[in-house]
Image (tube, rainbow, N blue to C red):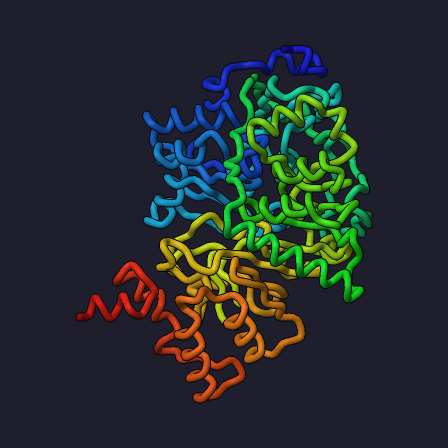
Amino acid sequence: MLERIRLESLHEKVTTAENAVKMIKDGMTIGSSGFTKAGDSKAILPALAERGKTEDLKVTLMTGASLGHGTDGKLAEANVLKKRMPFQVDPTLRNKINKGEILFIDQHLSESAEFLHTKNLQSIDVAIIEAAYIERDGSIVPTTSVGNSVTFAALAKKVIIEINTEVPEEVYGIHDIYQAEDYPYRNVIPIVAPWNKIGRKSIPVDPNKIEAIVFTNLKDSPADIAEPDEKTTAIAQHLLRFFENEVQLGRLTDRLLPLQAGIGKVANAVLTGFKDSNFYDLTMFSEVLQDSTFDLIDSGKLSFASASSITVSQECYERVLGNLSKYKDKFVLRPQNISNTPGLIRRLGVIAINTAIEFDIYGNVNSTHIGGTKIMNGIGGSGDFARNAYLSIFVTQAASKGNNISHVLPMVSHTDHTEHDVDILVTDVGLADLRGLAPRERAQKIIDNCVHPDYKEELQSYFDRACERGGHTPHLLEEAFSWHLRFSETGSMKQKVEAEVSN
């Protein structure tokens, strides 16, 4: 295993996770690799959770995005976390956040590293970074994600490296490690196409800061891949027809523009739909590469993909990492403040497809909260892409839970993306193109095309009565959240259920 530490002076730094975690003290801020379950700490953070069971220890934890192997839940259960940022998906952690027991900073994923470099966040005491191996200059060859690791390694006072022998050394070359200059000396980031590589292949680290090296041999947690169902397939078909029409109108070509797709079954279904389409030579400029990305590469539809992590099923993980020579020239992994940087998204003309929890009749989108107060996962990178994309698309099912929840509402209970940042809304019922429409036009388009039949009449009534009252963006404030209140009281947003309960 020492062959994976090519700087021989670091051989003496090899130790156990239990010994390495002793350098973490109460009150410290930890920066750890990991982006949507990929390339995360598989030894040190779990060991920290074990330590927290017997010691009074509280830390602030920053990562790229979510962690795998239930690590966030273990840390939360052990009461180790004082504050967490910028994204999470763990149910145990989520519950403690919503109870107010752990503080959570929900942040645009492009901004975490920027806030560290500008000293607008507390400094990093210890960086924990997963590596495939360490180069002769002490630099780190990352594994399946880059995330915020470049910034953590540069700014941390001490560094712990986890060398994961499950990841082949052939990953060398799939990363493009570039760090923009600090303000006010920042230069243009010279990426003009998804396949441009502008940086080095490993993360620079001062070897004198490396305090411990721990070996692991665990794969990333596999992504939960759900097969396309009736609703997700309908959403994908609406979108594909929209793109075909854009080509006919001369706004796009059959190659489209670089695609970005959020995580989850809807995004996978949309991307999978391209396999049987007439589109070809597609590219991606996204955050996460999922199974559908590599399926599209295998089908010949996708020629290149740029992101910050690979988050795939176990089958896809073995397919890709076991055949890197086949895929190596087809994708690149970058730091998330490059993959998500607003200027590049605007320059490349990215088509952004993200998931909404709910949206309202004017096109405002809630991506993060249930019932206006309880965090689900976080905004992730959806805001980075939505405001700056060539096309900003949000998708969701029209209704769920036996159609007792409508995902199209008079007013969203929490706003992550305003109507000004949203171009296209899609449900399994249909698609609303909101470009060039005033608020009243947008509302009618959404009601006509996106609302589940069980709620269409009431939503139309709300809008009509609001228009009678007047206003540029008409609302009945006394009724705006009545659907949410009805659901909390009766378990359904439907009017007839409310009537039956009152009787």
